[in-house]
Length: 606
Ligand code: C2E
Ligand code: CA
Image (tube, rainbow, N blue to C red):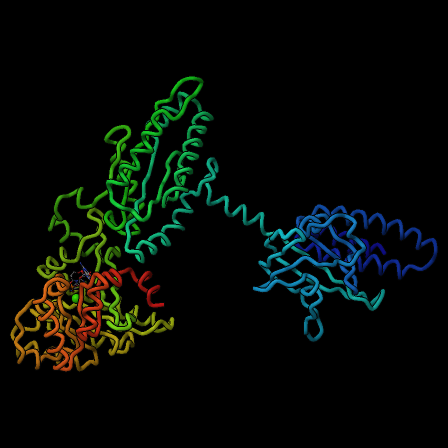
């Protein structure tokens, strides 16, 4: 007996999240004890002990944060703790009744009655395992939904009866969720905080890419706040911050704006569907004007000003740098005086790229991951389905921000660094192709721009061969873009070289077609599979009939030579319709998409 009680006490003591299990076992023991000790005196004494334990038990269970229910064989409620009653939206007199109608539960997608879920038989050989349904949704009788972890266990009472008791435990996750959500809110203003902005930005950037739009990050900071705080005191200063946050919240609903409270007294606004930088500056000026006579304290008007740092994507740098650049702009604004606005424009800080700086930074930039391959889709002219992409390199420089490739490619060709960069691009593209293959993306061809300097090393073909074999990428999906100008250098020799390249199984695309003077006889011999008609030839195609005739003739010529035609620089629907009617095979241009970081490009592929 003492032994049994000791075990029993240990069970009570051990009650925690697993309380429901102990409770069931505890009741088993009580019933077992009554059954075993048979003399009248013993029984009486035992009943007292048992009653005392039951009381302790109930108190302990009622203290539990987990909802606990014990049901009989016929699913009558034997016991239910207070948490369970609250969670199920029940009142006290439900005890001793069958739980009908049962609250609803959603374990996966479908709603079902909790009783169906509880009475579900588990097919198992000897043991009945605890059934666990994490992250289920419970709907109480007033249709209030709560996320819970649900556990169901059955206990056989072989010593007492043949019955089987069911123990149900429900762990309310809403508090933990609310707690987790608080982490993403500023403790004073309850506005989303720095952690939240970091979570939200990638989605915002994707949206901007897809909608071909711009987005501004505006950082606002009270000027001389530390001094103000020392004058009016900590609590009053908090009130100022709070009132300002409430004001900012009112503008959020009217525009395409989100507001965050990042640190101390910094507020960050994101504005999408941006019209112009002037519009943003005017918007900030309105906030500043509003603030000028905004806070009154005991009949004293506080003179409050905020400074603003603005960064606009994509003008102010890459997605990764935008927030940093907004801070840089804010620092500059604050250094310039009170109530100033500064827009971060990389080109503005230095009127022109310093060639020496770029030259010195190439090597390190490549090592630091400042170069990134973007992909621009190429679609079928008739169905608009993506069939391939052009890999275009981007350099996101720490001081200059986004540098257009036209600026650094030429410089890299001069210094020979282009060979190293070209190898990096090939490696990136091959790895990406492999990833797309593994993750079952639609297989598309990727075309890579090749510089004459790379060809001149005489090692290009060997290198490509080696890398194709290493990454085991099907050469069918790799194309190399050779400019018309390159193709014409030293006619016979280059032609032979490109024949060798083609033997690897890759395709060759003649880029910028129409800007050079390729003779038809030469074009016939050149091993190109595709001709890409240059943007300059189609820029005025809608209004210029001569351009229309030229482009149409080029398309026909290419087709007669057995080549496919891509037109690049297509920016509107009318151009697409016209080029399709001319028989153009593929189209590349901003109308379909700008070059995108791989993550965003993948979304188009899906
Ligand atoms: P490209 O080979 O003629 O590349 C096409 C350029 O036109 C790309 O500029 C592309 O973004 C742009 N473009 C595409 N569609 C449109 C459109 O509808 N409208 C307008 N306005 N432009 C459009 P990007 O990326 O600035 O590249 C410029 C040049 O830099 C490329 O001209 C290419 O010669 C060179 N380049 C870019 N990436 C690489 C690379 O990875 N390797 C080498 N060697 N050169 C590269
Ligand atoms: Ca190209």
